[in-house]
Amino acid sequence: MSLPRIAVDAMGGDEGVRVMVDGASMARRRHDKFKFLLVGDEARIKAALEDHPAMRSASEILHADEVVEGDEKPSRAIRRAKTTSMGLAINAVKEGECGAAVSAGNTGALMAMGKIALRTMPGLDRPALAGIMPTLGEQDVVMLDLGANTECDARNLVQFAIMGAAYARIVTGTATPRVRLLNIGTESIKGTDDLRDASQRLTDATGLAMQFDGFIEADKINRGEVDVVVTDGFSGNIALKAIEGSARFVTDLLRDAFTSSLRSKIGFLVSRPATELLKHHLDPNNHNGGVFLGLNGVLVKSHGSANAKGVANAVDVCARLLENDITQRIAADLAELGEDTLRHGANGGANGNGSAASSEAEAAK
Image (cartoon, rainbow, N blue to C red; front, side):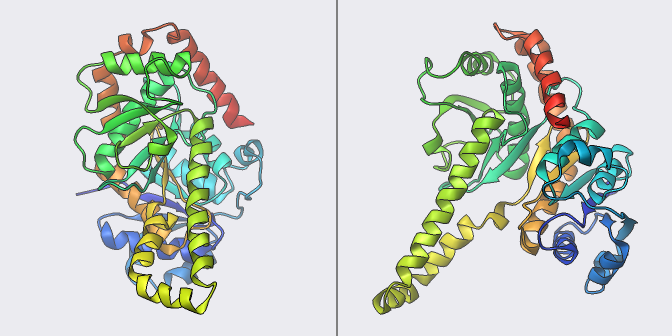
């Protein structure tokens, strides 16, 4: 089986080239049919590959002199796309040399360059950033948008639901994912006009491989009652940061409690198996890899602070999406929905087109 290569921005992230190469090599052991394009400082990449002979034989190095800085404005990053490791990795996808790219670098720059270089798939107005979060259920939950689009209308939300469901079918194995819109209440009268409009369109739609269950409140996101949570990027990013902050608060609180006295330390030793399970469940490295869904190519964002295991999970996301042809799945679901459903409602086609223009403007800032 011949699969497209995966481009790795080896210079992105806080931990340096070695962690990116270690993580990519770890992922390759799970997906040994893939080849890689490692983009960045050639000498440093070669040094990192010395510990991974199998990865070395499966990789090509593309030298890049420059790196997109963590605080660099997207507009400047776009102008330097032809000389930076991030820009060259994305361009490899654009030119068909690779099917996917992964970077742990500047999120805003990655989003901006990805939108401009790869463009959105036909029938979609905007890409959306989707992530995976742990739940109390048997499956993780997919959530989008997590920050790519601060303002969205009903048409955008319907498209996000389709993309999120397609992604969930791949990562969770659920044939008909349960999809809900994030809202301030579950009653049909709650929320903005766009939320209620999107809910009605999804309720009326037929033939989609999803179960649309209306609205969900933020405190239920991680309960295991839903497979896909859909929202605009403004609300989604706030919800994500709140969940991540709560997880850190709980782990810090437990650490302080277990080290406060000798009795507490003894209690920690007794309960260590449970606390280790909690630590594993809340470790962001185990759910690393945000995907910009809706582009003509797979683009994955790894946490800047990810360790090798986290990078491996991000590369694993790339591989699974390529193996399951995520773009074809989204295209098929859009065709099933039909343009009439997307246009239905007070916030129809004109708003959708305006949203696309707005999204491109946001990317160039």
